[in-house]
Length: 336
Ligand code: BTN
Image 1 (cartoon, rainbow, N blue to C red):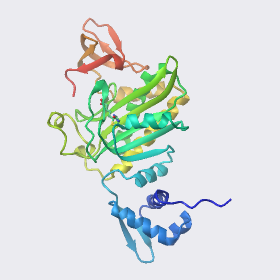
Image 2: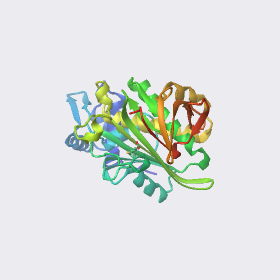
Image 3: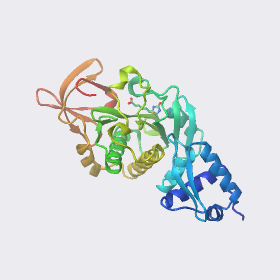
Image 4: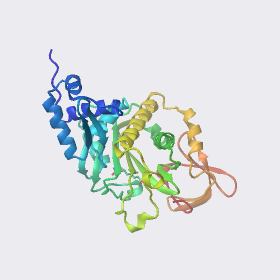
């Protein structure tokens, strides 16, 4: 049977993937045309379209093309090319604007046969955070991403899943981007005592079954001047800590790959006690005096680490340790 010819975005992804694989060198139009299985005219036309969308290619006679500059905002074909480069396989939808990527990911997965998918939007009109808060989502330099999964693990594992994801993201940003990021339990990433990222896990469940598990991440990558006044001293973007030499699409792909890998290993063996060393290393609250509200009751104490089930250990003034579930408390006091 004849293989169907790739079209539109598929050609763009294949071209960009070839260029990422050979980032120093040039790829000739002939090579691309043979490899992808389309005419040289189609290759040339696709390169022109990418240029209209912020890409710059260097062209050299007898050598071919090289990716010289990536766009500063999320680009669907480039993000997908980076994911292919990372060997991460998940259906990904990139939208210009949506109410909330968490809502869209849930809507899409509930009406699909896929086991997992991801949604990224350049802007959200109703981005939401924990405890009914709004998530400011109008800046093109940030990542608004949601995973939707149909997990096989039971709803009793949900409270452990979130810290696994948060600490895995934190570790990746430390290891790959050399950023001193910490996790502020239950699911914030903190850089220089300011909020870098927030995560929101939502699920449609019954007593022992999860229909859809949605995991949303907002990550500030490139600083914006549009943060509202009440936020600007409390939030930070990756490029405010150090000059980023890689673009937003590669960072977004690394976040998606980390999320997918973490979900798969968690689903395989929901007990990942070996990861607890990371929890200790990146626990922002550990040893700090904190205040929490359990319903209307205010508790003061010292954060004393995280249990293997994802609960926070609070050392009360009388020395006893209380374990707190994330969905039952709100934090305030001497933290960001
Ligand atoms: C928080 O810190 O309270 C969690 C914020 C989560 C924000 C992300 S942005 C992508 C996804 N879509 C949403 O509506 N929220 C999450």
